[in-house]
Length: 448
Image (cartoon, rainbow, N blue to C red; front, side, top):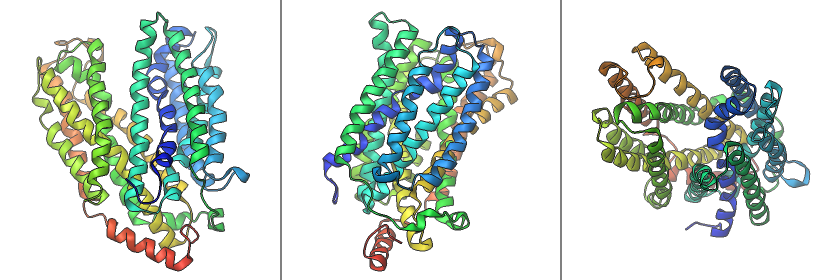
C-alpha cells in the first residue's frame, strides 16, 4: 500500500479526523437556530456574533502558520500543538452545546472564539504532519486520502447521531449535548492511538525560527496551487449553499428527504478514496485532480435541465459528483506537501505549517465568498426571500437563474481551476528529483 509507513501508522494518523468532523455540521449549520430557540438571543444577533468569531478564526490561521512549526517543548511540533488545541476546544465545545436559557452574547462569542482557536491549533499541524511523516509522492496521497476518508466518516456520523437521538426520545438540547460528549470521547480515544503509534517529526533546523514572507510569496507553485484550490472551493461552495433551494424549488423534494441526497453524496466520496489512491499509482496528482474536476463539470452541466420528478437522476448526479468530492479533499493537500519540498529546496525554509495555514485560510475564504456570491446573484435575478421555499412561489425565470448559479457557474469555475493546474510543474518525476537533491544537500530530509 505504501513505501515505508505501515498501515497501522497511516490509520492511527487518520483516526482523529473522525472526531474533528463530528461537530462540523452542528457548529456551522445547526448552532444559529439552536441558540435562537433555546436562549434569549435573537437570530440576527447570533449571526453577527458568529460572523465576528469567524473573522477571528481567519486571523488564527495566520498566527498558527507562524508558530505551529516550532516544537512545544518535549511534546514536539505536531503532537504538542494538537494537544494544546484539544485542551482549548474541549470545554468550549461542551459549553457551546449546553447553553443555559439565559446564555447571552458573551457566552456564545467567547466560547465560539475559543473553539475556533483550539480547532485551528489542531487542524494546521495535523494537516502539515504528512510532510514530516513521509517524503514519498504516493505515500503522501495515501496519508491525505485516509485522513479525509475518516473525516467523511465523521461527517456521516454527525448527520446520523441526531437521528438516533430522535429515536431515543431526546429533545434538541439533549441531542446537542450528547454529540459534544461523543465527540470528546472519540477525540480522546483516537488521539491516544495517534500519540502512541505515529512518530513525531525529527529534529529540524533553526530556519523555522524566522519566516521569510517575501520568499513565501515568491513561490509561484504555492500561489498557483492556492489560487486553483480557492477557485475550486468557490465552485464547491455555491451548490452547497443553494442545495436546499434547488432541491425544493426545482425537484419539488420535501425538507425531510434532503438528507438522503446528502448521504448518497458523502458515501460516494468515501468510496472514492480507494479509487483515488489506486489511480495515484498511474497518474500525477495534479492531472488526476484535473480529470476529477472535469468529470464533475460534465455531470453537473446537465443539472439545470432537471425538473420535478427527476429525483432519480439527481441521485446519480450526487453519486458521481461525490466521487469528485473525494478527489477534491484528498489531492490538493497531497500536492501541497510536495510544494513544501520545493520550498525547502529552493528557499531553504522549514515552514510546512505556513503552507497549510494558507490553504486553510483559502478554503474558509472561498466558502465565505460562495455564500456572498450566491445570495448576491439570487437578489440580482429577482429572488423573493419572502416567498418561502415551496415550489411554485418563485417565477420560472428566477428558478432557472438559480439553477444556473447552482450548476453552470461552478462548472465555469472548475474549468478555470483546471486551466490553472493542468500543466502544474511538480509531478512525480519532478518531485523525485527534488527529493534527491535535498538528500544530497543535507543527508537528511527536512534539514535545509
